Length: 303
Image (cartoon, rainbow, N blue to C red; front, side, top):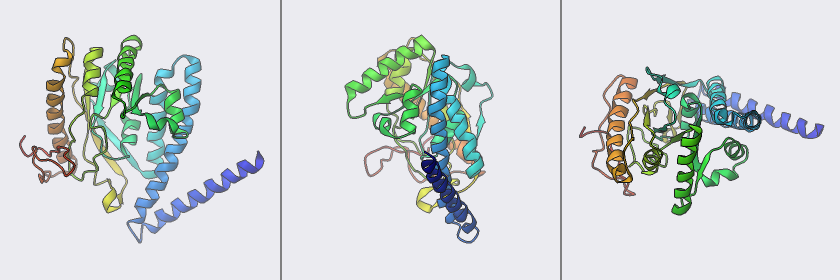
């Protein structure tokens, strides 16, 4: 056992030294900061997920497992602030994140850094949805399973529908909220764009008869731009919009609800990004255009 602990200490010391070396090298080669923050992010995620495993067990035994993901999210928020200097600045004047419950919270999905966004904005008594393959991921998958995450098998629509039905029941019975990225995948865009919204989040909100709360994150390519090897410290703005009610709506209303929410979200995304940058956003892609893979994108030219 002692030899194993020594081995872990050596690995940790070497990893820390390597990360610090890249940070120092960034004063000469700016791209080295990208590598340094990537290394720091991975170790922050590992430490936070390990913390999440233990805190989920403790809170489950204490009967408070519904705040396990919130507690772990906050751990990651402060770990990343310490190791990378990145934080999110939340504009939520009516405290919707703290008072609207249960609800379906939705946000745009830009890069892997959105995990840190959740660290800052994740509400109490809320659960994430995640692809079922994450169950097999050490530490992160263990934490998500223990903390009550809702796993979706995207390859099996029947399993996905059953998971959503179970989520709706859990939301009503336990007053548990759910946080979903309706785009379904990361967009990696340098400008404020949105993929088409998948309808699962909206079906869930209508089925549970709970409001939808949009959480808009400004485009942060000035902080993280993977293709350009840019990864800087800084603050990224978030704006929490007023809840969109679903009381009385039926599955027949989901298409209109999805489109209306996306239009509102896109308008706020562009405005928030312009405010963060202090200048107008380039409008290179029209709202009606399609990407090479057939996915519609938009930067708000027609808004």
